[in-house]
Image 1 (cartoon, rainbow, N blue to C red):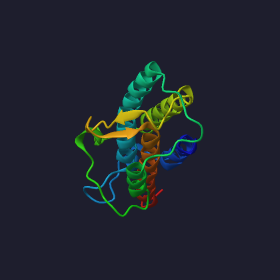
Image 2 (cartoon, one colour):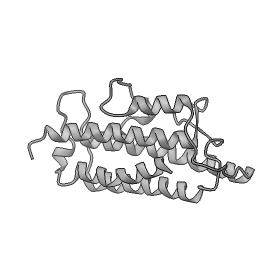
Image 3 (cartoon, helix red, strand yellow):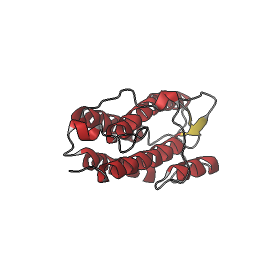
Image 4 (spheres, rainbow, N blue to C red):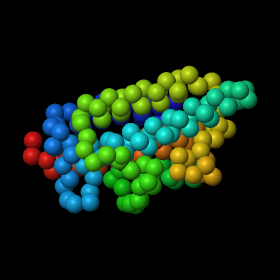
Length: 180
């Protein structure tokens, strides 16, 4: 599935973004109020970690219901395509991050951030593999922000990929301003 392959390709990109940076460089803010490289990665770790939990629950329920796959590659719905496209870098729309998704600390350590990133993405990829036989279009996943907001599981993977690209791009912009 294209969205799963896109996620797989982002793991080395995250490594490249933070490789070789010192703790002070990871935590450096180009301007007051902006996010550091560490905060960008930590935000993705927080957001994706919450989505992993919701995906696990939704896939489990779908398996109990016997919602097996239809033929062909599932595609996100219209809203999901619009929303994921609005997240792609370079972004034109800015969003205030919901409290649940804000970076949890003010200082970050490179190896810890990367280990968490890899762990979460490995879990996302294994969830995709373990549940490839299910109907991803039919399976609804609640947003960590509000249980009233639901996306299809394929839509969640599309949004996670676009959101990852957005904040990795943001982290790359911060890194480009560092004196290495």
